Image (cartoon, rainbow over all chains, first blue to last red; front, side, top):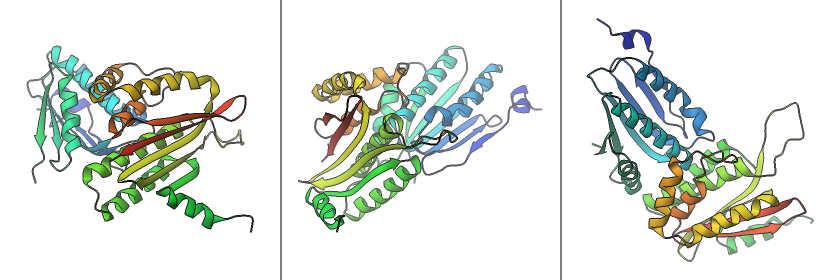
Length: 137
Length: 183
């Protein structure tokens, strides 16, 4: 039987470009993927469908299955960094409201700065399960 | 001959500049520029980390021009499009890469930007990190289009303090130049 969330919400998928990441949000598997580079001219505009999707997702009752977010970003500009921080702050609030959320920050060990970026987000988060994961080859 | 490209080319080479663009800048041009730059630095056997740092400076400085340059090339009111004009230069000299950017800005905004950059110049890595994190959680200012993090990011990436200059152009505008190094 399909849950309410699955029957109402749609998959959101945005293909990657050279300067925006591949984004996929799946309500059925409760999985969000963000992969690639992120330096659009207007970051807020690019990420607003993702944030709107999340608003809708969290307007539905919390379930036991956690929302899993996998982020593997090679490079992001400073305004993307701000949008990501807003996203994590939002998720942190949702965790306090009783939603189960897991974030995996996937970094390439060859790219020293990717781990550092992940650590800098992790340091600023208290309640969100934010896991730094080395990319498996 | 009333144009002398050889002289211009020699002048740039002598300064170590291997890429320079002056004119209207766009996001798609930035993407192409980034690709060429990454390829060129790879061929010079620069490390992945150095390539990413130089690329990050080029992105932040070019997007600064796109967002904030006071020189917009559109005399056609029927078209809702602004082409922001500026200069971006990338070079290598004395075992350091450098990224320079310049654009017109309103002289009224100079004092505010100057004090901000002067402050960044005096900060060490730990202070810059702290400021970056504070600013990242703040609401962007009224005039900010990117979140107000660009200059802090540039200062954090730079191997030594950023250099900048403001030159008056006329009664309304000044020319802002910024130089950042990666060793």
